[in-house]
Length: 166
Image (cartoon, rainbow, N blue to C red):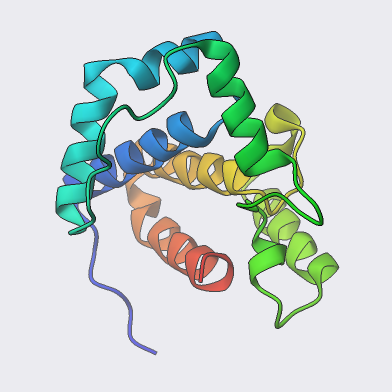
């Protein structure tokens, strides 16, 4: 197996910004988050991101203008549904080639190895996308704080993504 090409600090910063944008959009609804998503800054950032990945930019308003409608739509999309929510944010739901407990356990082992516990902040399962994004942001913070470990942190990120975000 060959080592990946080194990642520049600029690329690492951009990658972390993408993780933060996704986290801002997908985090649990709050009035502050609602205001952020209604703002032009978020719209411009999302437009740039869509352009980078040749993804279509959504037409019209991105989120409902009233907070109660925004919160209801979030819950109906990501939290509530029978037999499940329309959009499930758990890796174990999408990685059906392995038992869910094994997937959750592997996430916990990654987090423990890097002394990170995003579940404490979210209250969600270890394999929830919000925790995965927080962990990836944390790895970038470690990388920024300890440039001598950049290569090993980049390898850890690649391994985590290869295993959990297929």
